Length: 189
Image 1 (tube, rainbow, N blue to C red):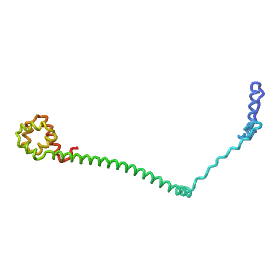
Image 2: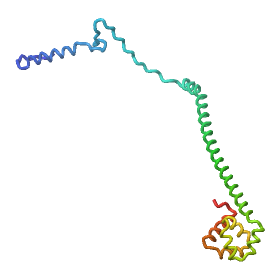
Image 3: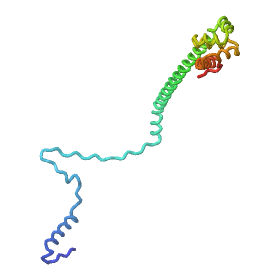
Image 4: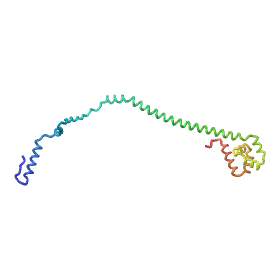
């Protein structure tokens, strides 16, 4: 089988290689159980559990699983939809409240406008209509601006124009702005 040479240089190495080769060829493969050592008085090691591969579930098991969780999934879906509807309803309620607040504000503005126009009674208007334009301008400059604007709106437009012409420019501009905003039929905001 293997030829051993008798030379001194290769003698010990060759003998060692032959011994290892013989041990490898003749020995049975070592198993993990054979290698374990147990201390004196110790427990013997438990045998390792073998992993087994479970078989894949068949279609009937899958269908049975799906039918078992169908009611729970439907209930969860309904709960999520109900929560979303509650959130949407809260948003709608908030918007409706804002619209109601805006409507109340517009009604208040309309009432103020009506009160403003009603302030200038016919008798007061007739008094200012009979005055000279320079005297009426002087008196209206001393009166509350809203009342002065209301009186000027009730006067004949020519007479009101002459009175505004006799007034200070800043006072006339303020009165004109008030009269223009009160005369608007459309909401300014």
